[in-house]
Length: 198
Image 1: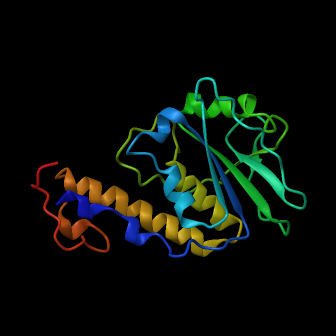
Image 2: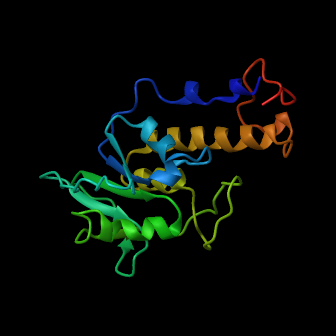
């Protein structure tokens, strides 16, 4: 049964305590997609806040920065600087959706317009093979969050996100017949049948 491909058992239990706080603004259309990855990151850390936006007739609540924490928007706007570690705890705000949807977050969510934008330093190419990437160097949302958390010193959370993401990608590719079972890192759960009816 393909239901056994679920990665729920791979999430840290309980979710990890981190210095960095994650706030994910996910577009309502993105929230419905089985290929969404932002929620994978949120499931790995205890201090995460997922807010669905773009719902007609339901304005997105303003973002209010917490005292004593620097708030950074992870998005390559024109004024973005490279994300760097800091002694000050960080709230990492991440838009999740298509590039067009994500680009609108700063202007459409009250409280985000004046926050500094940050980008990741150059790194390895994306391992995401389930959706096409329209931009050179683009990453899946969970990959970007994982790399951001690593830069900010939360390595255990970053590793957990990467592990769950890799499992999602490789198990899905295996279910499509694109890779062999031996190519699925960590193997497949017992009882999985690629030829089971979906």
